[in-house]
Length: 424
Image (cartoon, rainbow, N blue to C red; front, top):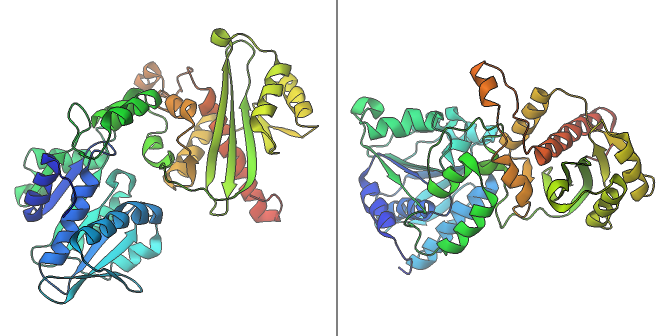
């Protein structure tokens, strides 16, 4: 087998084989997925025949590009011929016969119903913290086969997440399943020593250091289950930031969202919609007037027009600044500028979180200003102690743009459904 193993991966592969519940947590790219997929696949190919195995992930794209892609690499390394059937993949066994590999998208209601009809010998559940709790609980009830097992993987989130409190903490203190289930946790890491032997860790960490801040940095680089720091969009890093291989396809319509200022910071975001209904942050633009010199509104509008290029998006601007709107309209040849939706802050936050959780909001990884700001976009701590959900008014320009855009997008989608107007 040509795959290169780190000591942590090798330990997880061998000891995890005999563990009823094997949990692997750690930052992205730390090597846990490769070890988990190859462990599960090896069990399919080297033990009992005639059983069902299952992969569960947050999206079909994740199943295809991560779990099944690694399965194909494993099959090539082991000279095993997989057969794609209508509803499953046939995996031949060394004992003769074969096992079935089934895949399920956790957010697909029909797939969840389909899962209820199977008895499963072994589960591999990826991105657990991004999945509904009930699907994980339901999956555990399907482990009806003697010696059935499950492997669960995730990037860390805040330390009060149900998977941390109900699973990892109880595994660590020996109380999981009232102590009657053989369960073990493996913590993978990038720093100080990387458990992924094929990753250029210095280059990867350098890029992430530029993009991440606060709790997100601790989670995604150091693998720590942190206090969420009052993060307003706690699943932004896990669900919203698109993978580097994400292909949005043709953009059918663009939207420009602006939060202007003359003396602090002007932010703009260019959003697009593809044929799959993903709402995609294509690019972001910002100007720090204090650090880079003040720009009058007319010059800001000119630079934004040049930045957008030949595209003609619908345009929304924070509702308080009519002067900037006039200059921006002129820059876009008299385009109609819509004021941002007048909804309260809590409603806008709920809209964004709902879009993130439904996997429909995608932020391309080159939007570093937006990504960096998301890690510090938090609730005011003093207000939290008083039981108030007040947003900390600091470094929030791109987050405001995102909320304007998502609220507008939702409104226009609803308008389209009711009147067949607006192509969103």
